Length: 226
Image (cartoon, rainbow, N blue to C red; front, side, top):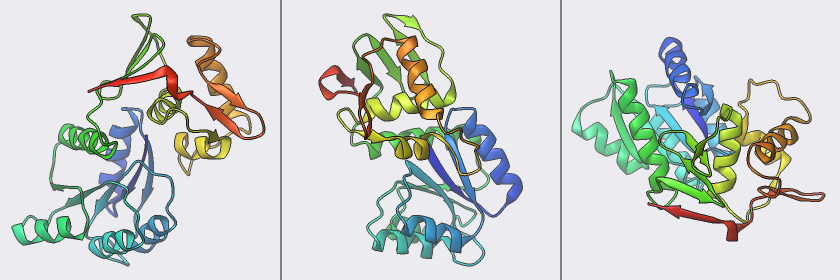
């Protein structure tokens, strides 16, 4: 899952990125309101945004309002030291999906982010199932025929995205954007390698190649359980 972190406190941002990457999220970081505004107005493929309000350049509230005006409905978790009730109401009315007051515990941030992602999917899915594969988004656990399977962070992200959108054909470029951050070095055949590994760890027909377009996990193979 790809997360955009907008936070001008470099030390705090570094700690959040480290914590979330350990949970297999792909985290991109921006420290300026102008950059955040441009990214959200361009509708970059993101699963969620963690947004500080006290940003240089453009205030976080203005960033949020502009994104919602452009019909960008990406889930937004606001981080802020503004703890007055009026400030929280302003943030929620501007389009925030959740609000976390600084200072906070990283465990609470992770829990709120998981809940936000579940709500944004329109369902509280605790397990995705596909022909003997069980993927648990909250615990980052995957089994195949009741045996635990070890996946890399990027393999897990790729499998999660495809199991979350069965029947959707993903281009290589889209998968690259979902799996890798802006600062990551990406080999030209990286997605093909990840898909090869997933097929090898599970079964060859799990992900079907759509020649000249990309890859798909067929819809009829998947169920979800709340």
